[in-house]
Length: 211
Image 1 (tube, rainbow, N blue to C red):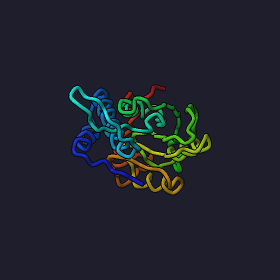
Image 2 (image 1 turned 30 degrees about the vertical axis):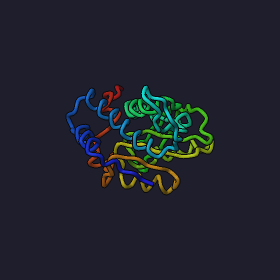
Image 3 (image 1 turned 180 degrees about the vertical axis):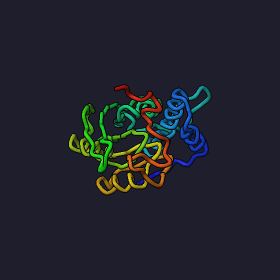
Image 4 (image 1 turned 90 degrees about the vertical axis):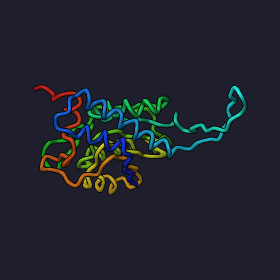
């Protein structure tokens, strides 16, 4: 399942962060804001209970999210840090996990998963945050590791931009995954970057790593 967030405010923010010469401060702020919007969309799919609340003047009907404490938000270092900040601002009671994964620079772009620290995922709603879904290799490697750790109730991927190839790759190996993104771009270049995309999200957020 793929859900494209086409809200006008989201698309305006996406347009801003695609700009080639955007500075790091505004890029991180834009990614964080989009993270919150993605979380709002996901929140609409969560189970709820009908409740009542006492106001100063009477009793009002209301709702309460049932499973917010069952969320595990997984940050894919380092690019996802600002994205997760926005997600966690919405899901304040969610648990948190961190994954370090590296994709080789040459086709077929094999992936090494290094650091992997997650709470229990058994019967949880596991939300993997990564700004770019490019080849799909990194996401598949992470989802494989998550499923070796336990059996999540739901597997959700939150992206800013995805490629058609990346979506197809992930859905082929993990057909149960739910993908939320703000745009689906047409292709990848020879280096495995999304075109038109927005460049390297980690470098744009934090600067290029030194030697």
